[in-house]
Structure formats: structure tokens, C-alpha cells
Image (cartoon, rainbow over all chains, first blue to last red; front, side, top):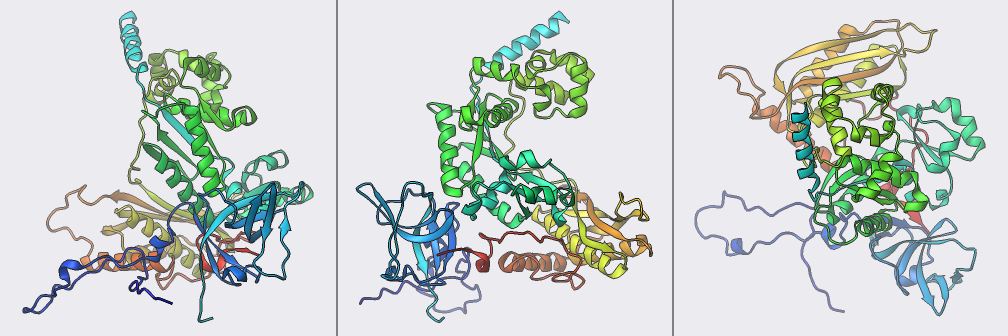
Amino acid sequence: MTITFLGVPTGGPALLPVYSFRVPAGFPSPAADHLERHISLDELFELRAPHVYLVQVEGDSMQGAGIFSGDLLIVDRSKDAEHGDIVIAAINAEPVCKRLHKRGGVVMLQSENPSYPPRYVMEGDDLVIWGVVRYSVRDHAQ
Amino acid sequence: MTWSSGVLFATACVIMRSDQVFALIDCNSFYASCERVFRPDLAKTPIVVLSNNDGCVIARSYDAKPFVKMGEPYFQCRERLKRHGVVAFSSNYALYGDMSERVMSIIESMVPAAEVYSIDECFADLTGVQGSLTQFGREVRGKVLQRTGIPVGVGIARTKTLAKLANHTAKRLQSHTGGVVDITTDFERDWVLRNTEIKEVWGIGRRMTEHLQSMGIQKAMDLAKADPRMLRDKFSVVVEKTARELAGVPCLELDEAVPPKQEICCSRMFGKRLSELAPIKQAVATYTGRAAEKLRAQGSKCKRMRVSIRTGMFNPDELHHAQGALVELPYPTNDTLLLTRAATSAVERVFRAGYRYSKAEVLLLDLRQPGEFTDDLFAISQPVASGRLMSVVDQINDRYGRGTMRAGSVPRTPDWGMRRELMSRSYTTKIDQLWRVW
């Protein structure tokens, strides 16, 4: 496994690095001209975009996709859901997180856990795709 | 007379060739639609939203309209609503405010310029948009619906007043129009003007409607054709402008920047009747804190405030009392602590034992913008330290949530606070109240 160290994320979205003016006279910092903004997870996840929402998962039906109970999902409502996307959907008004299968006239909501059978969407079922899951956030200290 | 109407006619002709296009975009049953976003089980269930303290009905989904009137007290309709399967919610302004911001920023990203007119409607300038305006309206509607789940209606016309009317028509004839109506052409505009009652016109209130009707002005078309000079002489320049706008002459521009308010008010009913001074002082301190936040948010200071309390006014078995006090402040200020001291000592003066109070109001008056007035050299002004303290307080509350840092006289969870027993979760603004999916 390779690990790329990205830097220290900031707590808030608008913190800018500021150098103290009380730098003692003498050798100036060679980094002063190369200061860049801190990395922001808000920006990476587009958390402030009007079409991005946070929802919370309950249950283990998606653990095969690395989504566990209690995880936060970052959901994008600006995209049309494609075959293979993990989606937030309402199937007969019940909110679920599943992988969307639509091939050969078959629409199906798949769990990523062998103990949950796929849910075929039949005529008479009411399926609304609410949004597409872009990222998940997991607290590993829990 | 002939001369002046000739001039007016000429002006009208010149401006009518203008290519300005306005849209009025508004959310359908906004509060009820917000409640549905995270409740797919309620997609086909009629919904009403109640005012503060669950007092009366302030919003209804379309399918709830047959069962309840706007403004009806909740205790009167509660049983009826239950019988018809209508679900009631307390007003959840955290949710509505966040959804409104999302809707508005999506619209703003699509149009050349926009003016947010209220929590659920905005005017947009579509001048110069190429291609079919109806198609453009549908794109706005589709994008907002997909990204927020909130359905909007779009009215498009040559003036703001006509855009409002087009929007009204889009709503009235929802199934024919798909929620988008473009009346930039004379033919469509005239059809709408002929088929709209005068009382539906933006800015024409009930009294004005009666006046106009007595003059034989029944339809919007009649007003569009009325002599604008006569309307100004008989009523006001506002009515004159409305008539011109209906005739297709733009008189109202897009106000992109909201001018600072001239007075700021925070007034709320208590969750229950209060007959002791102590909790009333807490409430007044709380409202003062909120009003001061609004004051600082628009960068103003105030020199005067009015604090008032009142009992319920309608129950015949209760003693009625309403009184206010005007407070002159030592200098123009936006310091919560100074304002709170002034407000609580004012309410001590107007409070009378033996009454059951239901409401308090804090009104900040004589508002001043920095640089707007010149004080004399020796006048006392707000100490710099207070200004700094307030800006730190505002930053802390902005970051960690409203009320994190507050005056000592403001309780965290008061027992006189708003009754909101039917409130949905703050799905989009509180990390511990997110929508749960399985």
C-alpha cells in the first residue's frame, strides 16, 4: 500500500495561514513565499454546494462496499443515477442506501451483503432515486 | 391634457420596445415541500405547517387546502385534520432557511442576475437569454427540483408585475402549463390580463381592489388600460406604476442589494402565559440579544429602543394589559450587554403584577449606518472594546451555533420558550439530526 500524505486539514472552511509580523530580525523564513491555503475537506466533498447533502447509514446491508452502520454519506443530487452507482432511494416511501442495477430492462436495488437478497423493482413499486452517494465518512476510533 | 397624454404615449412606446425580461420564480407550498424532502412517505400525504407556538396554520400543501383555511387556529382544526389524514408540523425554520439558500443559489447560478424577494421567491433578470424562454424556465424548474426536491413555478414577462402575474397563472393552471408561463408576447400577455381579477395583481390590496372595482376596473386588463395620470392623482404613484407595469412598461428594477432595515424587531409569543417578572425579563433579554445580532449583521447601531409586553387580547375572561417603554440610549450602540441592561430595566417599569402576559417585543429604532452621520467631536460614542467584544461573540456563535455565548440573563432552554411539539428534525443543519437511511 502506498500512502500519500496530503497535509493537515483545517477545522473551518475559511482559515488562511497568516505569518506573524513579529518575526525576529535576522534570517527570514525561506517558506514565506511558498505559503498555500490549508486543505479543506469541505471543498473536497463540495459540502457547501447546494446539491450536496449528508445522510447517515443504519444497518450492515452495504458493508461489502465499505459502508458501515453509523457512517456518514455525502450525497450528490445533481447527477442522474447510472447503473452501478450507490444511491439513496425511496422504495415504496422507505429510504434506503443500495447499489443501483439497471440492465436489460431489469431494475434492482442490490445490497452489498450476502444475507440481504436483491430487491427487484416490479411494476407497481414506487421507486424514487433521491441522490448518488459520492463519499462515505467513517469514524475508526468508534 | 391632450398634450400630456400624447407625451406619455410616446414614452410608453419607446420603452415598450425594451428587451428587458423578468422572471418570478417561487416555490410551491414551500414549507410543506421542505417537510417532504426527507419524508418520502409523505409524498402523497396532505401537510400543514403551524406558526410559532403551534398557534395557527401558516402553510398548506395543495392537497391540504380543501380541509383547512389559512390562518385557522390549530386547536380548532386539529380533529378535522386528523380525520382527513392531514399531518401537521411545527415550523422548522432551520430546515426552511437552509433549503431556501439551496434553491436560491441554484437559481442564481443559472440566471444573469437575481433578487431574492422572500424565503420562497426570487425575481430574476433574463434579459439577453437566448432561445425559448419557456424552455429556459423548464430547465430552471427541472434543475431545482432534481437538486433540492422543491417544486418551483416560473412566470416570465416584460416587467416584474407581469412576471408575478405570469407566475400566478402558472400556478392556477398547473396541469396545462407544467409550472412555467411566458407572457413576453402581446398575445399571451393580453390573455392573462383579461383573465385575471384585479385583486390578484401584485401590490393591489383589498381596500384598493374595492376602490378600483367601484370605478369599473375589474380585470387586470382594465387597470393596464386606465389612465396612469388619473391613477396617480386619485391614488398614488405606486398604483400608477403598477398600471404601467401591467401595460408592459418596466418601472421596477431588480433590487439586487437589500437596503439596510430602518428598524429591527424581535417579537414572540411565550410558550405559556407568564405572570412573574423574572421569566419575562429572561424573555426580553433573549429577544434583545437576537435583535442586536440582526443589528450587527447589517452593520448598524441604534440610538433608541422600545420594549413592550402584553397579555392575550382576545380571551374575555382575562384582564388585558399592554404597555411599552421607549428607551433613549447614551450613544448609538450595537452592544448586546448595554441593550440588554436597558431593555430589562425598561420592562421592570412597565410590568404590572396580577396580569398573565403572553408576548414581548423588542424594537430597535433610530438606526444608523457607519459613516452616515457625523457626530460632534465631544459626543460620547460606543467604546472600541465593546465593538471588539461583540465581534468575537458573533464569531463564536457563528462557528459553534446560535446562543453558544450569550448574556447571563438569557437561559439556555427556557420553560417559557416556543411550543414546537410537532417539529421535524434539522436534517441539513445539525450533525446529530441527519436523515437516516437503511
